[in-house]
Amino acid sequence: MQTFETQNENGEYEIKHGAWCDHHFVKHLNFNQQGQLTSRYEKTNKGDTMIIVLIDYDDQHRILMVQEHIANIWRKYERFPAKNWESRSLNYSYDQGLLVAIESHGNWGDPFNGNNHHRLVFEYEKDRLVKKTIQRGIPVEDTLNIREYKYVAHSNELEEINTIVEGYTTTEGSMKFQYDDSDMKNLTEKSFIPKNPDELNQEMQWTYNSQKKTSSYVSGDTLQGMWYEYRNYKYNSQKDLISEYTNMEMDGRARLNCEYTYKYDEKNNWIARLIKLHHDIPYGGGSTYDEFFRESQELEYYN
Image: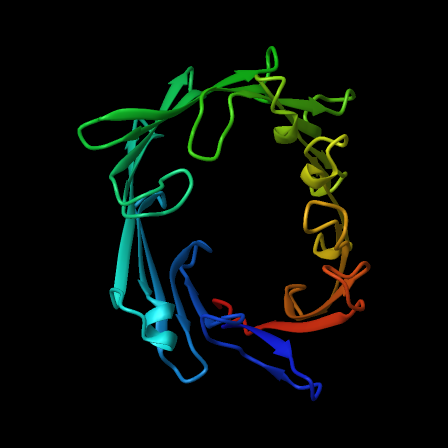
């Protein structure tokens, strides 16, 4: 079970619900003996179920289907006219041990936007992924996005991903990967460069530490402050995030520091996480302030 609580003005932690505020639900997650998630139920603090996720696997422990059923939060808390429940699903297909397609039904957001049927198709050469194609409609009505994959010579490590057909939220361009020169296996950096030189605000760069965790992220054009975003991350020895710095609003005004403090169980998994948010620069005037949250999870293990 997982809970996310907000500290109120009295210094007490509470679970908030409602469409006009943070709506964090109590999560119940179930796993099989292989450690695979089989279901997730999200409920209000009064026990009302709001989200149901069900996941099926085949006898080789490969994912077959994901079903999600969501209660409309606006209808529940604000009584707006809307469907009580909405459902969506993903269906996975395999051939000769390789994932060859994912079919979506319902609106999953990017890359499967809208309520149309979508199909993500995987193509391989010598068991290595070389192309992904997102198609709309069953049968196919349109191709929405194409990505081609290139690899480092004599290696299975990615060298470049080229987006040659733009998607709903993707831009034509290349994602390039860089590795530690000593073995060409440890990823140190990846960067996205748009094809159109007029879209410098779409540039992105990630760097990675020795734990294979993201250490920084940069996007946008430094010459256009309102499109520039920077994030920096730090981790503890358990590889859990302990510090995050970001300019948040992407314009450099509302810089945010986020600190995480953990409590672990005997198996070295965290069971409580305290979160402190500090706004270095006030957004829209006013004074800086701190916010506090508490995230907890109760874990049960197979014998």
